[in-house]
Amino acid sequence: MTAADAAPSPRETIRIRPALDALPAYLPGRPPADDGIQRYKASSNESPFPPVQAVRDALVTAIDGLNRYPDMGAQALREALGAEHGVDPSQIAVSTGSVAVTGDLVRALVDAGDEVVFPWRSFEAYPILVGMHGGTSVRVPLTAEHALDLDAMAAAVTDRTRLILLCSPNNPTGPALTTEQIESFLARVPEDVVVAIDEAYREFVDPEVAPDTARLFAEHANTVLLRTFSKIHGIAGLRIGYAVAHPRLGRALTQVAMPFGAASLAQTGALACLQPAARAELAERAASLRAERRRVIEALRAQGWEVPDSQGNFVFLDMRERSGEFADFADARGLVVRAYGDDGVRVTIAETEANDRLLEIAAAWRELS
Image (cartoon, rainbow, N blue to C red; front, side, top):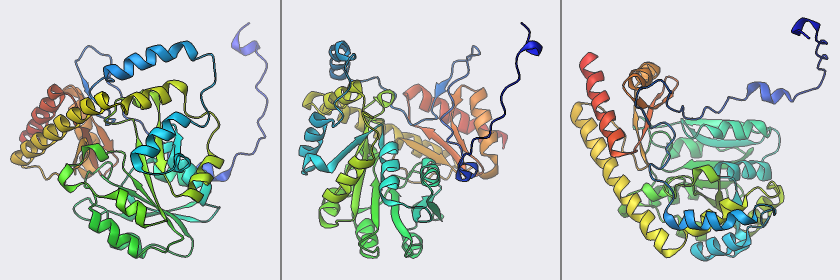
């Protein structure tokens, strides 16, 4: 039977929520093209290292139990994370990456018309998560240095504000907040407005400037910490992250979480990452990536680039309207990077060879421009 002979498709009359028409699409980092050119992927802020051996061994052992549902409460992982953060396990909310936990926060806190304040540009899932649940996004522009403008964010709070998202280090630009900056900001925020400190890239922050968010969490009942195993831990493909919340919000996050959201292998991999030997190896990897980041930033600045003070595993090039052009230029020369409209280009600190390729491409661009 030919296509012409096939029965016509039925006319759809279902009603889709109008809010979906306004949702931006999440654009993942583009993978390298398979056209014979050796390319490095520096578009998704992934770890350039494979999982540590302890994780690999644990996953192999856990495979035999995949015929069973995962522990819906992720009890062993929550107990381990509770001990690490000095809280009751019930205050740990686990889901498929910190992005999913952020979505749970919106579901737990935001009704239609309620506002969520966040910096922009920042993590591009924020407006998607807010919009899909009927909330109103309040995007606060960054400073000229591509950092969070906390004064402007505090001024943006209204009686409809239910949640504030602080991405630190900020993705995609890189600057991080200090303890003093966050503390001063919290003093200006009403106590019934939740402030989520998104620390997906915390392990890449230079230790001497890392904010004491544990103390801030302990002192402020409207704070929540977001973490992920997708970056330095090297298990992005397993999709697991968590929130550290105060008791009432912790219960609410459990209420709105997707049942069985954290897969068995993801829980197993995360637990293995918390073992002492794995922690030590991951700490060495973090230190090496911080050193590579410093090397790359110094080299770019020596070439004449203005690069924000990144504390993430990435650097940001303020390319403005030439962002897409630079991404194509890099791709043709073996490096896949991430362009953000007319705002700039983010490049992951990846393998040494990839970082060297970036420096070569950046130098070639300046020569031609």
